[in-house]
Image 1 (cartoon, rainbow, N blue to C red):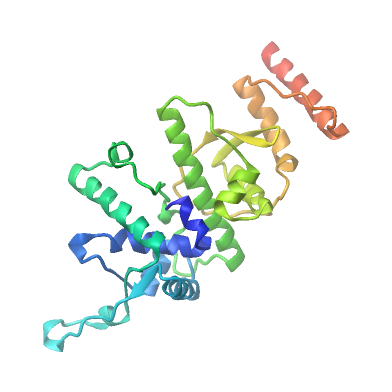
Image 2 (image 1 turned 60 degrees about the horizontal axis):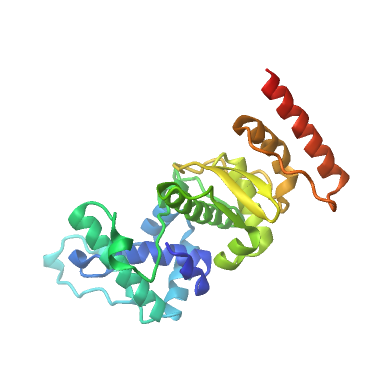
Length: 289
């Protein structure tokens, strides 16, 4: 995916478009995507209605265009049902869709000829920056397993934001840059999501053990970003305030990593001062052991 998609699409549309584009940019298959709705559901973890609505919207926005299935004589193909009910999609005429597909095709060509995309960004200086999203993380493990609509939307957001942060963290470590930090305002503007949504997603990632973080002024310092394999636990509640459920966890993190604990400012609340002194006391005990 690319964060630039969110300037034009919702997260669901961006998710579906990225998946379709990955296959529609394959020259060996005629630059066309052919899958059924059910196949997309199984891969992406969305309901059939959500998939159909997203594709219809992407076609309306000119990100995708629908191609008529090829006419076939029955004797040429014994089983034509899957071919008949599959979506036949190509990249549309929208400027950014074209640019996204152009760079995607070059990157996939590098991957297929060299087995790696290392050096892609240095060699080509692309105008689109990609990050990998593990689409299989939300695949159902059984036929009857389904996420509710709001659960699905939240967990897909979680998967997308985690993929972006993990990509940035890998890049920071590769080039020996400081630990990754972002503000809620920055993430909100980039993803085109509300600030409360960003906070809720970050809290969910933390509760699922995908990230560890601490708060520093108006920024979030991500001290650990784990790789996703599967998201099966969902979440119990949505929290819109990072400090509410992060204080105890961050205290343990400060002690384990021996990090400095920021002293509350002059406008801090009594609760923040109390949490600071409790954390300092706990850290002192930890070092005395």
